[in-house]
Length: 454
Ligand code: PHE
Image (cartoon, rainbow, N blue to C red; front, top):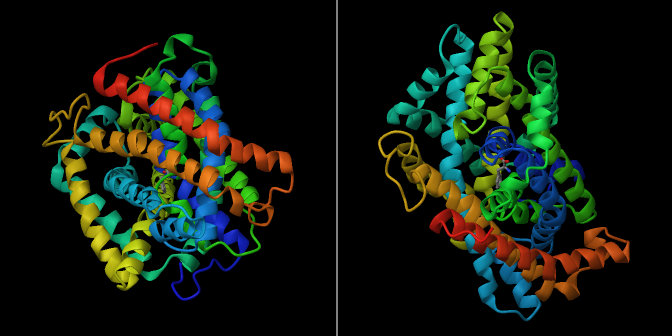
C-alpha cells in the first residue's frame, strides 16, 4: 500500500489483493491435508457450510471495520470504539489479530520455504526417488529449512517495507489466473490418470461417525484461515478501499474464488492419493508426497509442470504472506511513528524467531510435545488457526453487531436489500458469537484435554 495515498488505486485492486491474500497455502496445502486428517466428507461439507454461514458474514464485518475505521487494525477499532462510545479495550480485538498474524507468519514462511525448495528439486526431476524419502530428507535439516524460509520471509518483508499497492496488483493480475488454470489442469489430470470416483466419494460423502467437536472446530478454523479472517489483514485492506466500493459485493467475490480454489485443489490431489494408494491422513506432508509422485509419473512433462506448480504455489504463498505481515507492519509504523521499512524490519525479526521454533518442530524438536500437541510446529498452528482465529472472529462479530449497529449503512455495505442487511447483523449479534464460542470450547476440550461430549 502506498503510504502517501492510503487508498487502492481502483476497485479491482482490492479484489486482487484480497483474493491474493485468501488464496494461498491454506487452499492447496492446508485444505486437502485437513480434509484427509478429518476423514474427508463431513469435514468438507462442514467447511462449505461454515464458509457461507459464518465465514462470509465475519469477513464482511472485518472489512467493514477497516473501511470505517481507516487505520491499522488496533487504531481502526479504537477509532470506531470512540465514535460509538464503547470502551477502548475493544482494541484487544486488534491486538489479538496481530498476535495471531505473527504466529501464522512464523509457520507459514516455513511451509512456503519448503515449497520453494521443492520447486528446485522438481526442476532437477524426481526420477526414481521415493517421495517419502525426499520429504524426510528435506525436513530433517534445520539449517536448510532455515535457509529457505529466511529467503521467503526477507523477500516478503522487503515488499511490505516498500508498500504493496502497485506491485501486488500487477502481479496478481497475471499470476492468479495462471494458478486457477494450473489447478484446473491438475484436476483434469487427476480425472484422467487418477481415481476420481474414489476422490469424489471421499470428499463429499456424509460420514456421520466423523461428527465430533474436533472436526467441527477444524472446519471453522480452516474456513477462517483460508478466508484470511481474524488477523487484521482484512481490516488493513479494507482501510485502503476506495469510497465507492461496497463491502458486500467485494466480499462475495473473494469468498467464492477462495472456496473454489480449495475445492479444486482437493479434486486435484485426492484422485492421485487413491490411485497411488497413498495415505489420505498423512497430514502436512500430503501435498508434497502426492504431487511428487504425480510429477515423477508424468516423466518429462512433470519436469516442466512440477516447477511451474511449485512456482505458482510459492507466488500464492507470497501474496498471502505479504498480507499477513501488512497489519503488524502498519501498526508498528503508525503507533511508533517509524518508517514502513523500519517497521517491516522489526516484524521480520520477530517472525524469524518464531519460524525457527516451528522449523525445529520438524527436526530437532520433533518429539517435543506441547500438551496434547505433537511438536512446536503443530502447537503454533493450533494456537493460531484453531484457538485465536475463532476468538478474534467472535470479537469482530460482537463489536460490529452490538457496538456499531447504528453506524452500519447500506452505502458502505452495498446491501440495499433490508432483509439481507438485517440478516447479516443478526448473524453477527447472535449466530456467530454463540456458535463460535461453543465450537471453540468443545473443540479445545476435546483436542487439548481429551474430553468429548459427542
Ligand atoms: N488465507 C491465506 C491462505 O489460505 C492465509 C492467510 C491467513 C493470509 C490470514 C492472510 C491472513 O493461505
